[in-house]
Image (cartoon, rainbow, N blue to C red; front, top):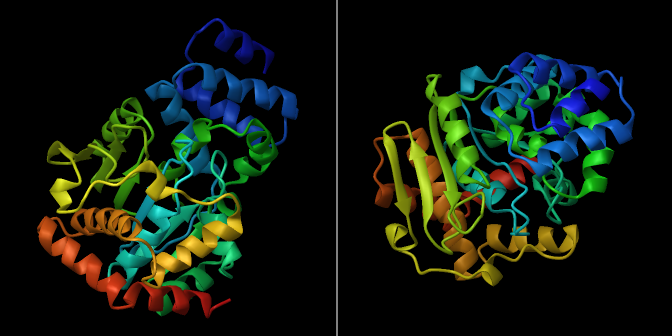
Length: 330
C-alpha cells in the first residue's frame, strides 16, 4: 500500500490493473483501516480516471455474489449518491412506481453515506428485509415485480471499507461504482450521477455494451431529475437538457426535496408520497424520474405516455400495492 499511496500523492494515475489489484487486496483484509482511509482520501482530493474506474469496477464484479434474474429482464434505477443534498428517497420511490407500472425492477442500493437515509436505510425501517439467496429474490420478482439488492451483502469488498466510509462521511469512489456493479447485471438502467465528468465516463462504459441506458445529472448538482433546474440526459441516441417544462411540471425548490433529519422521518416522507399524501412537488419529482425510466425500458414510448403510465401507477395505488406485496414476504 505504501508504494500505491506514494504514487497517488505524487498525482500519478493508477492503471486499470493496479486499481483492480488494490481493491482485491482490500477485500481480503490485507490493509489497516488507516491505510484504506488514506487511499480513499486520495481520490476525494482528485478526480478518478476512466482506467481507475474500470479497474475498480472489474474487481467489484469479480468479487460480487452474482444473481441470475435474466429471465425477468429487469431494470435498475440507481443514483451514485454522494451529492450531499439530503433529498428524500426519490429513485427508490420511482422504482416502486415503475414496478407498479409492470416493468420488472432489480433495485441495487446501500445505506446512506453523505445523506441521512439511503435506499437500504429507508426500506429496512419500513420492514423490507435483505437477502442474497436467488430463490428468495426470484420470489420477490414473482410476487411484487421488484427485488432489492442490498449492496454490502453482495459485494465483499464493501465490508472492509464500510466503517471507514461511514467515518469519512463524504462520497468516495465507491459511490461512483454503485450503479455499475448491480449483481443482477441488468441490461436496462436509469442512472443518476453527481457530476458531468462522471456522466461522461458512464457514457463511455455503457456505449461499449448493448445496454439501454439513461444517464442524468442535474446542472445544480443532484444525481437525479429534481425539477429544480436543467438536467442533462444522456442516452444511446444522444443527449439533451431536460427542464421542468419538458415534463409539463412546475419548477420546484431545494426545500421541496428535503429528506428529513432521521431515518424515521425519511421513512415517513417515503410512505406519504407512496400513499398519495406527499406534496405536489414530491409527487412530480418521483413521476419525472419514473417516466424517464419507463422511456428507457420502452424507448418507443413518448414522454407524455410515460408520464401517464407513471401517474397511473402512483395515483391508482399500483406502486403502493407493489410495496405491500414485497413487504408481505418479510
